[in-house]
Amino acid sequence: MQVLVVFYVFLGVFAGFSYLKKNEAFFVSPLQRSFLSFFYFLFFIIFVSTRPADHPGDTEVYLRLFRNLTDLNFLEIPNEYRIEKGFILLTHLIGKISNNETFFMATIAAIQVSLWYICFKVWIHKNYILISVVVFCSLFTSYNLGANVLRQGIALPISFIALKLLFDRKLVTGIILILLASLFHKTVFLVLACWALSFEKVHIKYYFTVWGCISFLSVVGFFEQVISFTSVEFSSYSHLVRDGAVERYKTGFRLDFWCLSALPLGLYFFLEEEKKKSFSYLLKTYLAIFSVFIILFEIPYSDRVGLYSWSMLPIIIALFIGSYRLQALNSGIFTTFIMVLFGGIFFQFYSVMDISFYFKDVI
Image (cartoon, rainbow, N blue to C red):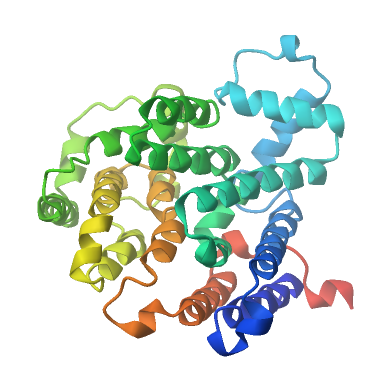
């Protein structure tokens, strides 16, 4: 077992006890929960910043970009990079501070978790922010953001802050933040489009119906046939799709992706009836994002879209606490320990989390 995973489990025990009412006098302090959140995020930063360059994914690509930009002035940076300008500028500025690659990865991870913490504070009641942090640091998908798709790891929390502002009818500020997020990953316009499709006056059952039909069509291979008869150009990504991506990526209906994304939908049906109404607007947007993801199952790199639905899990799971018909589901300690259990499983079985220090390396 990895040294850092022991640290993760240790943090999980204390995070769970912080929601145990009998220990309220010692554990329930907001300051103590903030410290636990800090150490969870510190765990995340150390974990992703100590990964080797040959770790499966895009780590080597980002490190090569960092090395290429370190010795350049900003005006000398060539225009051939397909990476968004915001991330190019950020990488360049980090290189001006230090050319150490671990420092670069740690800085990016620190920026990511800072943005996610702000995102959770915008969305979640302060008592449950720690649970959002625990969920985030327990999902293997979060480590994709930290290890493989660094740009999305920055763009996603900004886009979700923007989504909350859009829900609160602060349209100008929300759209400005979407534009800011697009400087790090252009796919954030998906959030804006799916919010625009979430009509308050349309009953959520129709969104579930459309989502169910899209799921069925994906299972029977309808979208595979559509794409096979359609000439699809992927602009600057076309070479990635042509050059072996179809062979490297499993395409078609992905039951594993579908089940993970369907978790909030299952939890929604355990909510009290009145609470379902208050969360219907959010769930409509989620169903729209999920439906787009299913349609794109046939395309390599569709998991980049899946990250939008998976990254909403820390928000939705924490938001639902206190609204369930079953009291066990309203328990913060129950939610925390379940997520830590899943996190332990993910650390054992997902290669993206198979990094960092082992006992055999330090003894």
